[in-house]
Length: 314
Image (cartoon, rainbow, N blue to C red):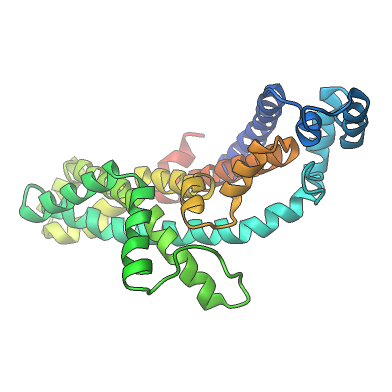
């Protein structure tokens, strides 16, 4: 297990280095100069040059890259061009919205998908299976922002149970969780549909294996064989999807955050791109990439825990 973990850890470090280089190059080659954008089209060239020097944009790109990476290693993400605020502080403020939202959505998605997928697989071809698959097809086809608008219309406007948007902060945890409930449901429903289909397909593949027939021949009922043997072996593709979903929910909630006016990382990226605040864009995207790679690393370790055969191949 130690050798397997070290190999995956090495892959994680290399992936982070490559990702940082790609992010820096992609953002830097994007058209538009931050200093010119901040000062407007009528700014004098001398003024633009002075602001570029103040922002550190006049040094060679490789020096800026090394300074950016070195700063991140020490927790210094730089200073926002627009707000003149440490980027680390801006990320920390927004992360306390996006991270709980992603965790709530992922928990809700998993709680829906696991029993639904197992139920559908255990009743393959029956009415329950058809109903679950029909619901998941609808969940996959309908975009999450449409779910969000329906939830606002029903629970915020008509029933008045929740607010239509905004975030009150964590001074009142109950109100904060309440404000994140509708966005979490809107994010979770499409992901639950995907995870349900993966869970069902994986279980059906396992149920057709020889070892499952052997378990049945030894006297286990179909339900006992499913819970004792099939479920654990079916978890590997499901863990992959859960890891990818967490990364998506953390990084891809831009539209939902716009619908509910949530001050999360998604809105921060959107605002920074429109304002040409390059250092914020680079740092936030790198943080999200770091989250994706770390989650995949954890999923790889979970693979090895679920299936010991993977450790033996290293």
